[in-house]
Image (cartoon, rainbow, N blue to C red; front, side, top):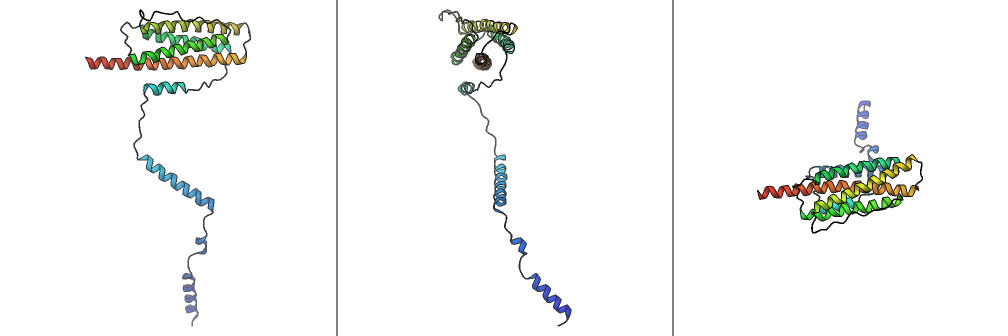
Length: 223
């Protein structure tokens, strides 16, 4: 056998001896799990990306419940900041009163009770805030339900709230100017209640808008 034939024979043996030993080395368990997880997540994203997104429409009661679940996450403020915040809430109430002053305003019955409850919650929060600030609480002037419309009662409650906030804001500003002391716990409670009032007013405005839109839709249908 010549040397060339011997080399060729050895080459054939080398080529036919099987797969590369390095190819038989398995992935480490952790690497395999990660690879499987990545593959699964890619498949999941591909499946969901082709599906139409469901549009959520919150009902009136859904929005009421959502507001009730809102947490009072507040950063601690000083009396001066709270006095300024109170003035902002007073301006917010004034805007609502302007909306309600329209003589042609019509509110659906379904909304009247919830709107009234919101204003009563605001008065409850004001009562606590005034108490924690060491101020007297004066209840809203009672109205005869048989002679006053719901809108007039709303305006009465809003005006009462404005008066209380003016008292609260003025007293807090005076405390700050005179370096008067108020316990941190009471100050925080006042802030929580003022924040709650803002949330209630924002929700009241949203409900009022929906009530007016609903009434407008009914009028258009009737026409």
